[in-house]
Length: 174
Image (cartoon, rainbow, N blue to C red; front, side, top):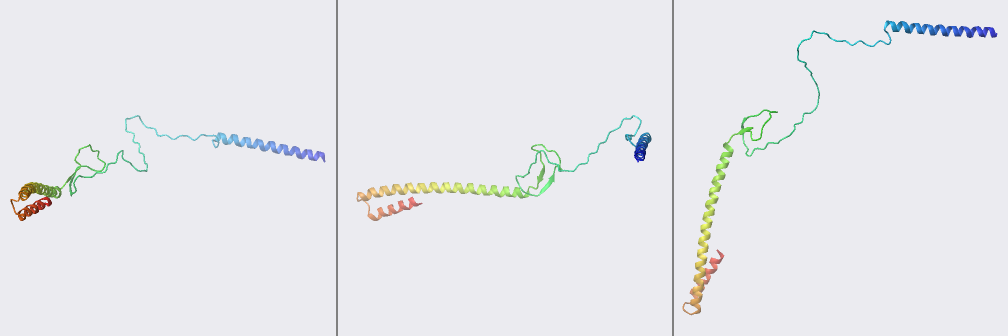
């Protein structure tokens, strides 16, 4: 029985060695055929040397942001009749970007100038009225003092003195 077992173990060893040799042979054949361990060849396009422009295209998505964002606000409102720049143009300080129809704001300017002239005339009229009121007050004050003095000296009647007093109070209120 020991002999039979020894034979079985010898057979097993022979099978293992045979299998190992078979695997080694299989690997050698696969390597030589290029199935394993072969680096992929790089495909290149060959052409003659010549001058040409290299074009590189980049496709990207995103949002374009300006370096400086400026909000425009005209000094006058109105209809735009001429636009001197396009979207995305560079502009310099002081450049005329748009022209606005002058009809509306010119008529507003004329009305404002007329109103200013009217207010100046009113001011002059008020100054003249003030000068008249001051003169009337001064005269009423002088008449009052003179009439008071004369009344105290018993030269005029009390009614004349009261009239001068009344005129003086009216001039003070004006």
